[in-house]
Image (cartoon, rainbow, N blue to C red):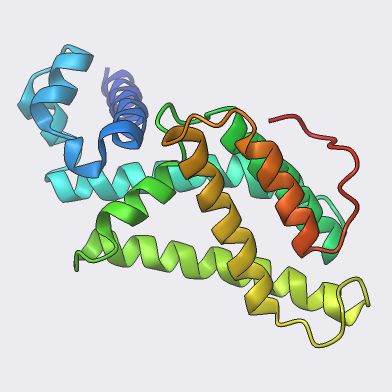
Length: 207
């Protein structure tokens, strides 16, 4: 019986998190009210709170789940490519596919949360900032290899490449959801390949 109860608790926690990331992508992390989640999941407020202890812990757990989904969708499939520009091009393919397929119903969870918390000190903002620094570091490391290998022009600043790719992705998310631009992901893919000095003739990964 204890094993079954532990398994059920993990299953319930996972269901809360899945609903939380979907809801927060549309209504923001502050939209994660206990009442809303309890109603959506047919649970009591105490039952939802019991899995996390506080709203802030729920927000942090939802952010970790969203980062895990982004990693699965973008980094993991791209990591098989050769380091440097080939891997950056694979990241561009999978990143635009992730945005174009609306993996989260309200668009990129991390982009939305970053806009919501960028000027709000606290643990959620710190976690978001740490995640952004880590991802920009990954992109800059790959750009550094591409410059070393001669696949990007000598003198290219790897930090500028990382900044540009991230800015393009954020722009795609905004154009897709604020302006309802159906071609936003394709535009972003072309823009990323321009940054990476790669041909733009044909897209291999559909959004």
